[in-house]
Each structure stands twice: as C-alpha cells, then as structure tokens.
Image (cartoon, rainbow, N blue to C red; front, side, top):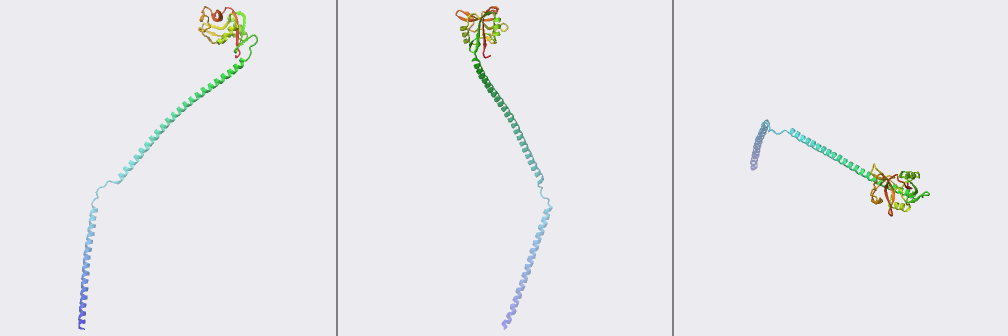
Length: 275
C-alpha cells in the first residue's frame, strides 16, 4: 500500500511535467510559427514594395506595332497593284497579239479565197471554152454535111463557083457578093492544091495591099504574109499600082503575084457553109 501510495504521486508529477513540457513546446512552436509568419509577411511586403518601386520605374522603349502593320499592309497593296498591272499588261499584249493574228489569218483567208476564186473562174472559163469548142465543132460538122447548090463545087466546108467572066478586081468581087459569096481566101495548102487542080487560067484572089498599113490582107481581114512561099520568084513584084492579088502560071506551077487592080481576069467565088 505504502508503495502504491507513493507511486501514484510520482506518476502524477511525471504526467504534469510532461504536460508542462508539451505546453512549452507548443509555445515554442507558436513563437516559431509567428516568427516565420512575420518573416513571410515581411518578405511579401518587401516584394510588394519592390514591385511598387519597379512599377514606378519607366519600361524600356519598344517599337510601336501599328506602323509596322501599316507598312506591311501598304507593301501587300503595292504587290497586289503591281500584280494587277502585270496581268493587265499581259491581257493587253495577248489581245494585241490575238488581233494581229486574226488580221493575218483574215488576210491569208482572203488571199486563199481570191486564189480559189481565180482558180475556179479559170477552170470555169476553160470548161466553157471547151464546151463552146465542142458545140462549134458539132455545128460545123453538121453544117459541113450540107451540099453546095447547083453549079458550086465543095471542098471541106466551102463551096466554089468558077466563071470565065472577066473583069477588074473590084467588079469581080461585086459579082461574087451578089451571089452571097466573096473572092477566094486561101486558108491552107490543101485548099490551094484543090483550086489549082480544079480551075485553070488567071483568076483573081481575094487579097489587096493596104498602102496606109503597108500590109497585104485577105478580104476576111487576115494578113497575107509577104514571105509566103506561093509568091512568084519568092517575093512581091512591087510594081507601082500593083495592089491586088491574082494567080499566075509560073512554068508548070501556079503562083501568086501582085497586079494592077484594073487588069481583067477570071472570077472564082467561094462561100463558107459554116457562116
């Protein structure tokens, strides 16, 4: 019992002592926390003060952003304007080139069209001439099949009438014209051979000398060449006033010679069936 009694007060004292120590520790901890709070508060206040001081100091100068944007926008607008100008020039150049090409094309087309028209016209003219020639030949063929009237001889497409009637060149021609004919016009060697073999004597031929022109012409208007092989002695006599043509016997062959138109020779008329 005595031990128990004495033991209890000691335990009480120990417990009380532990409480006191805990209280001391709590106070110590509280003071420590207070000091730390004060330090924190002081630190925050110092920070706020420093921030205030810093905020009061002027910021370093930085370039304004709005002018840079304006410059960029201006450059963009200039680029767009230049691009539009280049596009406009390109379109104008292309339009000019197209107009020039179209003009050249039109000119070439007109040239080709004119050439085509010329070729077509030439071809049409040739075809018409060929048709006319064919029709003429057919007509001549039909006309040449006609018979000459009585007293007239036929050679080719001509009819001939010989008369022993004698007269001047002009009178003999008038006689031929009265029979709807004219003096003989020799168109070929074959015709001359026919006349020479069929009709004899000295006869007038239908050619005269035009002193104003210096040419011999047949009555149908064609020219009689001065170097014709039928001329006697190969050339004209050229006597004064010998302006009419007659046939003359030269040895064994008939030739032509110039003669006075007033001389009197036989008549040989002809007319063409195709006229």
